Length: 396
Image (tube, rainbow, N blue to C red; front, top):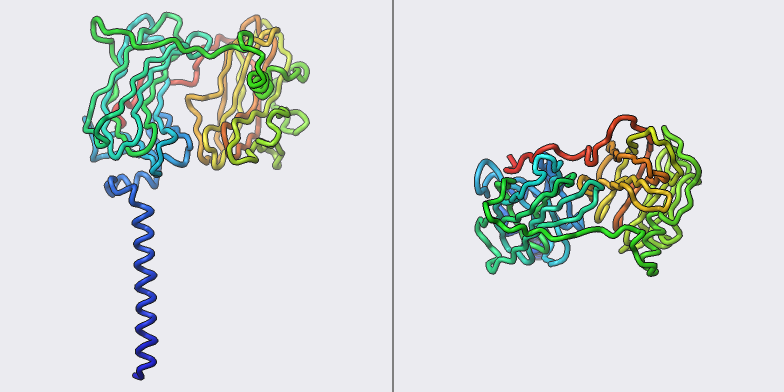
């Protein structure tokens, strides 16, 4: 073998070694912020599971991952965890469950559980939200933990709230704000200890009739359709997806577009950091014999940073909100194939305007097809789509 050939082979080996070293080094850099995860948890991060009867939600949606751990547990067989895969302090990931409030009416209750953190750069927050009979959030009990040690061992949390007789639903959540990892386990809802102080505070969304006429508020009312004239009388049954039958306000110009793709409508963001987009239909309605209304459709979404959903709103003759639901306690972002969704609301004699449509918060794409309106002639309870009782509080 000549000297030239030996030199050539040596150079090839040297180049291959350099390439392999660079690849390994780059991968170690990319995964360096995962070095506090065990192997089984890395698998769970890459294959985000469903946690039975819990909503998994994040913003930005793709910056957080969820998983079930069989190793890191406080009690029982498993815990649930949230991890932010990026070394940043912005954004949040949460798990949420919403239940009917009937069994806790008139009681003072405690929402409690345990959490553990690793490499935490942010806060761990727990909330218990109370909705009244009009489906409005009006009280919240909240606890925020900022451990001095980013690697906090299992610690108990607790929030206390008195549930009024007119409460319709309770929604409780645990959140990671910022980056790092947090595990949750052994949640519980019980009667509060004797003498425990109610930690909830008033929190009510402002209805349009009480709002100021600021440019920002006017823009919001335009986007969600309060200032859109009704298209005529409501027709029940299948709804057209022809673009001329839907409305997207001029206030969304430059942020969102509404187009038709075959048998579906496509609502999508067209700028990097939009606010929220709404496609809607709006009709006059008057039928005192009807007790409820259902809006159903099929949706799919792609690369949604916050939330994609449908919505339904009932108004009186003065455009005051009588009932509203956008599935905020059961909707998520990211990407999802076609799924069936529906919203059911009660109708009172004051109802005179029905508005419904698709909602996209922040960036992404949302497709809607087969929209359908059905009138209901039997009593309808608010929150017909939430759980009757707490479920899977230990994430088994």
